[in-house]
Length: 384
Image (cartoon, rainbow, N blue to C red; front, side, top):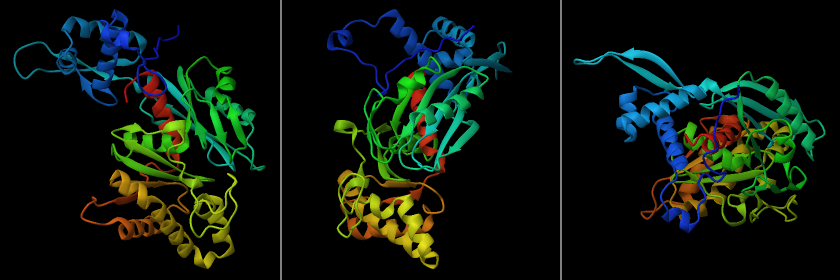
């Protein structure tokens, strides 16, 4: 029998309501969902508490807490564990914990046109299975290739899949429609429609840099305000403010890869010449290192300087003190970080701005996949 796993909030991470609804009393179903969420958040991902402790933590009555716990146990989202012996008189109380193995999420990263990578994660975002396929043709990615990899990953799952997550370069709207992804050759691509045909569950399609910064904030360093730069076949940035991804008007916030740099000369897929993407993207840097292997460190340092120049203005504008670089380790390394740090310091350091720290991603190349899966967790279970 299928477990019931309700969709609690929409893809943007907030419940939609009109003015009259906000002024009205909460419906019993709304209260029930809030209570379920409160209990799961108190335990997520690895805490253990008794029913009495959960009542105190959530502010719910003991009766309401017991009812919600019973429902979540029935759904498989909680499990009972050891008994806790009280310090004083009284009976031992049984501890409860979140059951991360009760469900799975399939997540796929489309940012590398040479290979398609995917993972299956549990409900704590821990990777359980991996799969990838080579894309020797490069250039335009066929939706059937994404659907094929997704099916392979679904076949690996022995628990209910609560959602599918796709991290893609380009511009993605709230409904998951890929408005434009120049490096993939896509315009108005409804990838979710094909994935829904595989399995009946929510599908979250999001920009790869937005997903990566979400992962870094929630599963990496835990910083709620940061800029993350994703270096792949293109260059994009994700902006996290107070734990929320900033997508901007038209969903194009973070498209720094298509800002023209003063000394750029190469044509870009966007139609301009000299964009940041034509200077520091993975294919450009790999080609430069292959051509001049003895100059590899200088090439990567120069890329770091260019990134520092590009980031100086948004850093000063927001006073964000954490900048994270994510991408292939052969390129995105300490040399690049140190060069970017020095450049940002040179251009922005003053008594008016806080000190900026440039760091490598703590998650690495899985950041976009784990972040997209985290967005499924936020949408379906609201634990993040």
